[in-house]
Amino acid sequence: MSISFIYGFFTGCFVTIIGQYFLQKFINPRRYSKQIDSKKFDLERLFNDHPVFMNTIKADLASANYRDVREFFVVDKEAILNSSIPRLRYELSTEILAVLNRLEALGYIKKLKNNCLHFKVAEDFVIQLNSYEIAGKEDQNI
Image 1 (cartoon, rainbow, N blue to C red):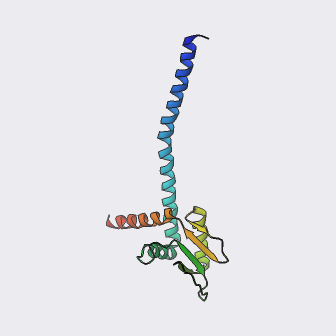
Image 2 (image 1 turned 135 degrees about the horizontal axis):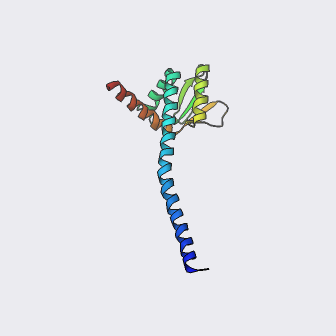
Image 3 (image 1 turned 90 degrees about the vertical axis):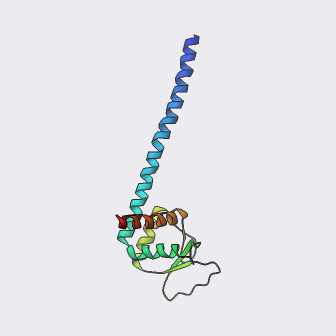
């Protein structure tokens, strides 16, 4: 093997590695922005399809009393629950079950193993709810 072949081989490998790095650096932010846009679109669809429950959960998570609460129950109106940890409580209905299934499919909430409907809210969901509130106020000002 000649020196020029080895030099060309290593130069080609080096250029390919550098090119792949910069190509991925350029492509990945675009991929993440598409994911963020689709999550915003999904959240907007949830607010349009189920405004009562979504506005209720947004108001509850934004209130000063429940700012740090990240778990909630969905139970019958007559059910009695005792918990040492503060949790939100919503009344069981068919509309709420549909919303919960969509929220769980999107990864915004996670069902905890229990003998009732007990969910944990993802921090990403809380952040998106707060940003949705800001976006809604900005749209009203236009």
